[in-house]
Each structure stands twice: as structure tokens, then as C-alpha cells.
Length: 251
Ligand SMILES: C[S@@+](CC[C@H](N)C(=O)[O-])C[C@H]1O[C@@H](n2cnc3c(N)ncnc32)[C@H](O)[C@@H]1O
Image (cartoon, rainbow, N blue to C red):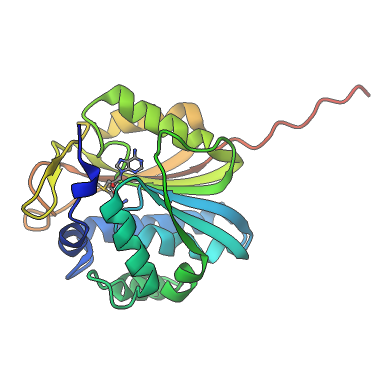
């Protein structure tokens, strides 16, 4: 049984997002920004969105922020007490938190993505919850980065998490997800180890096919760029659940 409350949020944030933007994260960010433009989603219209298993990572939220309506809410959902604490602190002071999120904000602004940490703080609501217990048909968009494959070794559990995530979207809802490819598990700081489901890129894409059309990228690292041993790369996927079917009329 994994002890999620012992997740070392500070060490995880510092090693993954602290001193620089890792090559794979930058590839993912550039890919998502490009694909969002292609989807022609209007700015400022989404009311309910969530980042599931948000952990200490704020860049998925920064990617979605321009699409949220002025009164909209982006739920930052996690089941780890340590990560919920870290997120609440980061939302109180995103500019002072361990990982310097301004470098992500700067990259996104350079790419023409109209986002800001301040805006993210305005719309974010940190919330305890689980990927396996999401409301059905609630969200206009969901984010889920390095979660479904990074909480279990079991492919059926990965599939159940993904299914719950997809069912939490409204018809036509947007999903932006990322997964570790070929991961053998990970550690936070010098503390506990955490499980991973060892999936190839074709495995991951096959799991997504029943949920609608999507685009994906395999983000790779050079010899010296790996964030840790024990994985092959990362993937990001973006797509929309099929829109509602038009009602049949009797005429
Ligand atoms: C590898 S971390 C990814 C964190 C972050 N999304 C990122 O991109 O770095 C996995 C995250 O899943 C969270 N988690 C574990 N079990 C969960 C569950 N059942 N539902 C939602 N989140 C969960 C952990 O607390 C942790 O924040």
C-alpha cells in the first residue's frame, strides 16, 4: 500500500521543476500550446476544469488558464496530504515557492500563450480527491500529468484511472494528459519509493482510442538530460470527448 502522505513534495518539485525546465517538459509545453491553437478553443469560456493528481506541478494549470472564464474554477485535486499542503502554500505564494514557476510562465508568454501565475492563483481551488472517484460529466477540461501510470504497477488500475478521468468530462470536453513511458518507479528525495506501470507508447495510445480523437507526442531526453534513471521518455496527449449526438427528430 503506497503511503501518499509521505510524498516529499519539496524534493519532488525541486528535482523535477526547480533549477530549470527539463527538455521533455519543454517539448510537452510547446506541443500542447501548438495543439490548443489548432483546436481553436475560444479563450475565457471554460467554467469547470480540474487538474487531477496535480501534485506540486503548476505548469499544466498555466497551460489551461487562458481558456478559463473570469468566474471559472480550476480544481487542483490530489489525495496526498503533503501535496495538498504544498499546493495550498504555492497558491498563496506561487512566486516564492520552491520550484520557480516564473520560468514556466516566461516560456509560455514567449510562446504567445496568455497566461499568468496570478490568474492561476485566482481560479485555483485546492481539493482533496481521487482519480478513481471523480464526478461524472462535470468538467469542461481535465489535466492529468504523470498520475494514472505513476500510482500503480497494475495495467487494470491504470485503465480504471483513465476511464474515470474521461468520464468526468462533459461531452466535447478537453483532455490534456501526460504519462511516463517505460517507467520502473520513482523516489521522492531520499524517502519512499512510488510505483509505476510500465507502458510503451503504443500501449498508452491504445488505451486512449476508445475515448475519441487525440494527438500525442513522445518527448525524449538526451544522454545527460534524463530526470532520473528508469524511464524511456514522456508522452503528452490532447483531445476532446466526442460532442453530444444531435437529437433525432420525427420530421
Ligand atoms: C508522479 S506524481 C505527479 C504529480 C504532478 N501531476 C506532476 O505533473 O508532477 C503523482 C501524483 O498523483 C497523486 N495521487 C496518488 N494517488 C492518487 C489518486 N488516487 N488520485 C489522485 N491523485 C493521486 C500523488 O499525490 C502525486 O501528486
